[in-house]
Image (cartoon, rainbow, N blue to C red; front, side):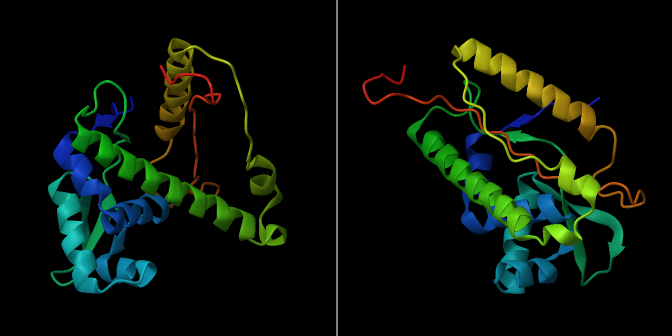
Length: 197
């Protein structure tokens, strides 16, 4: 059974909304366990800087050390395998909470765009036919009431949880599997004269 998503409190939202922390968190999500040195090379920062921000992510429960890997000088980190949410009625509704949620959404969108750009830029000729045919970049525009949008997203997240439970994310023993980036974006489209209520 999949873990319930973690709805972030304001201190956690502020911690994750830092651009470098968000970048490190997303790197670990996308590419799996890594050291501060490896991440420093990927994001163009010093090892000291990445080490500090990794410790902050650990303090707020976003990442954890990989037990049994590395040594005293080399610590391996991975993302805690729990979905995080910053929006909805359960999230902080103060101006500071809304600002932190906006920063998180912006960082998440930048990461999503990066994953899509990397897929499009990849040499499609070298990708297996199975992966090439299974990959999907699509858009749907629907007319829904807020309750229907919530119903749709709950169903989609439930389906994702079902598939998440099939494989351990960091298990590379099955050569038929690979990390897969899934992007869900479901937001209302307001006409210029329509009120956002």
